Structures are given as structure tokens and as C-alpha cells.
Length: 398
Ligand SMILES: Cc1cc2nc3c(=O)[nH]c(=O)nc-3n(C[C@H](O)[C@H](O)[C@H](O)COP(=O)(O)OP(=O)(O)OC[C@H]3O[C@@H](n4cnc5c(N)ncnc54)[C@H](O)[C@@H]3O)c2cc1C
Image (cartoon, rainbow, N blue to C red; front, side, top):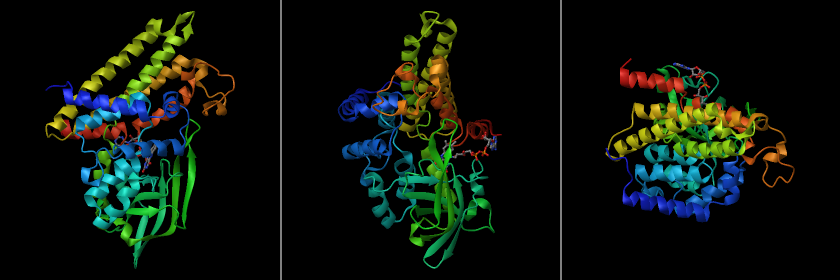
């Protein structure tokens, strides 16, 4: 198996790097690099820039506006973007709903919704999880009862990321109860501005408002917003999850985070010496770097297999576990390196253009908050324990 990039792939990388140099606003990259707040507008600006180039929906087929890239090109693009400090593509519309509509939506739904994902007319969020239905997702209890041309939706979703920015939510809803639980689920597109919807913030351990609870009380949803067939939503839900786990290893994010950690470890001193020279700290940094190199190789092996027509199976679960463990270890080391500077000190210091006195190095901003925030990595997209279950079933047959 050849893990080296071809000359064409290296040329593609150069094209991506040139684009990032010309079009990624340094103001935004600087925020990403130092963990500062990104506004809704920052994220929308980056989406619009990618869309203009035709690179936003980079895994959609060409006929729907994708660039027609190979798995290797997508890997190169995603990693170079992360290393350059580009904001992540908000996944809900582009990476999750788009592929489901392309595969299972009606022609009319594709014609209407797909261009709106690309041009930013709609901001989507994901209404899967509920209290009592996370790992055991098929236990969703939010109901949708058909009344004429509408469904009437009642229930609650939770952990809805960026739901406070969204005008649309795609939901798993229960449309039948007298069958096996997987067979009574439907996939519904809901306008967040419909009467009866209430979004309440959940403030997480890092003090941020990123996730929400969404409540539905007698919400009328046009039956035309049902994707595919009634009670077949579980099939579409699982298809979407395979996209949610794409590139979840996040090699580029780890490379960028490790660079930030190294910068900080050279700048900060303990007993008059750079922290990077402390043998214990240096050993932990070296270990995580070796782990990252190993994971990169595994990731490339999986991509080479996909490029050769294979389908990633247990490997994507392995990548999810290792990738998130590595990201968590790097954020733990950064927090440790910063010592007291890692703790939040002045809220306004996290905003762009803060002119007050800086406390600690630039790399310190939000180091503790990011450490706490990164705890989520081993939970969402299927928790790491669930990934281990998948591996044991697929490889060990348990
Ligand atoms: C920051 C964040 C953002 C999120 N964003 C969204 C979103 O936008 N939309 C959305 O729908 N959901 C979202 N989620 C929800 C996420 O998908 C769930 O948290 C996840 O599926 C786990 O479900 P749970 O929280 O209900 O935990 P539970 O399923 O209750 O699990 C609790 C613990 O038990 C373990 N466990 C459960 N079952 C098993 C088993 N069979 N074997 C071994 N261990 C097991 C789990 O690994 C976990 O450690 C988000 C979550 C977080 C933390």
C-alpha cells in the first residue's frame, strides 16, 4: 500500500494552500488559532467564501454543486484548512442533511433545500438526541401525528448544537408505537420559527452557550417536509451518522493544537527554563506527537483503502477513539502548561480587538475552557464506549 501522495495530489495541496493564503481572513484565522470566540457572521463568511469557490459541499456529487474530489483530496483539504486556522465547516446542513436529501429526498426537496444549504439561506441544526435517547437513539419519543396535510409535533430534543442560530432543524420523530422501535421513526424538516417551538440554552462546563434544548408543543409541520417514507427514518438516520463520523479523527485540528502547545511550551518558563526543556513535560509532548503520527498513518491507510474501492468499517471507529483521545490529551497539556493563565480571567479579553492588558501569553486564552469543551469529543458522534462496542462486534464478532 502506497501512503505517499502522488504528484497530482501534491499539486492539489499547493492549490489549497494558495487559496487559504489568499482567501482565509487572517482576522478569523487568528481567532481560531488562539481559541477566541467565533461569531455567527465569521462562520457564515467562511461558508460563503468556500461556496464561491465551489468547495463548500466537498463530498456532494458534482451535479448538486460538489467539486468531484477523491477521498484523498478531501483529506488534504480538511487537514490544510484546520492547520491554517480556518473555522470548521458547520456540519449540520452541508455534511449531514445534504447527503441524506441527495440519497433519499424527493426531486422537489433537492431542488428547494440543497441550494439554500449552499448559499446560506438556511442554517440547520440536528434534532436527534433526547433525554433518554442518546446512545440508544432509536428510543426517541418526540411524536409526529398526521392530521391532514400536516404533522403535529410534540416532545423535546436536547444537546442541539448552535440551535440558537438555526432557522431549520431536521428531527427524528416517532410516527408509530406498535412496532419495533426502529420501525416507527420518521425524518422531518421543521421550520424553527413555527409557533410552539422554544429554544432554551444549556451552558456547558466551559461557561459557553453552544448547545440547547428544543421544546415542541403542538407544532404544525407540512407533510411535504417528510423526507423519504413515513416510518423509514431510521435508515436515513444511520446513513447520516456515517457522514457525521467522516474525518472525525480530526488530524488537522490536532496538528494545529500541537503547534500551539509547542509555541506555548517554548515561551513559558519553569525555574528559568522553557517548559519544553522539562523532561517530564517534553516526554508527554513527544508521546502525543508519536501517537498523532501513528494515527495519521492509520488514517492514510483507511483513505488508501477507500480510494481502492473499499468501505471503512471498524477503522472509522478506531480513528474516532484515537483521534479524540489525542485531541483531549493535547488540550490537557496546554491547560497544564498555562498553569493559572489557563483559567478564564476577563471575559472581554476573549473578544477580538481587546485592548486591555494581556495576562499570560496569547496561547493562554481559553486553554482551560477548551480543555473542558473538548470533553465532548469522546461523547458526541457516538461515544467512545459505543465505538468500542462497534469494534468488538465487527472485529471480534462479540
Ligand atoms: C457538546 C455536545 C454537542 C452535541 N450536539 C448534538 C446535536 O447537535 N444534536 C444531537 O442530536 N445530539 C447532540 N449531542 C448528543 C450526543 O450525540 C449524545 O450526547 C451522545 O449520543 C451520548 O448520549 P447521551 O448524552 O444521552 O449519553 P448516554 O447514552 O446516556 O450515555 C451515558 C454514558 O453511558 C455510556 N453508554 C451508553 N450505552 C452504552 C453501551 N451500550 N455500552 C457501553 N457504554 C454505554 C456512554 O458511552 C456514556 O459514557 C451532543 C452532545 C454533546 C456533548
